[in-house]
Length: 191
Image (cartoon, rainbow, N blue to C red; front, side):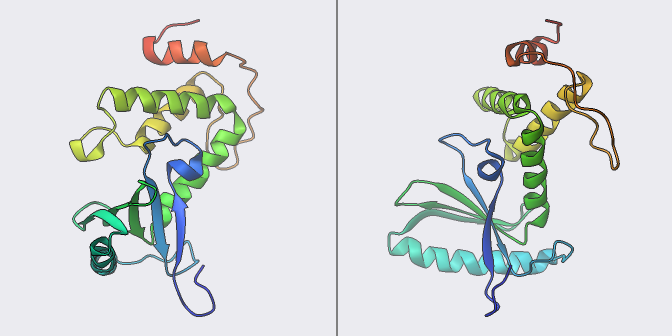
């Protein structure tokens, strides 16, 4: 990922790459210094880099390019929140967030298996935001937790197969419509 000059590469992940974003979604970015998935960057180093990014972003904030710069180094994943003034897009900048990138790729793959997963995930995420249960900082569920529950729900209905290594389950024969799946999700009843 780092180019020949050794510079880091910025990669998007999260709802934008999973194609589960809304007009109000933030853009999750990971600044990666290594292309190796196995490379583990120590937390203290991530915190140090986040602080350095925050200093640069504060300078750009004074120039009117960004606003709302907020480093959160005590978070589970150290992060800098920033808003681009030109677009109004809120960005969450992390360092070497390989776990987040990998989870996003997995969810994108699951979405490609059955479009109902993507539709139901989007609907349930929207419902969760409306009901204020989609905010890990408020000790509720993260979007990834909600999406994982949707996947589990569809597995229980034999729409998605188990995500185990070497699973050779045949494609699902369950052709339930999205409306039926939504009803089952929210009312736990059969269609």
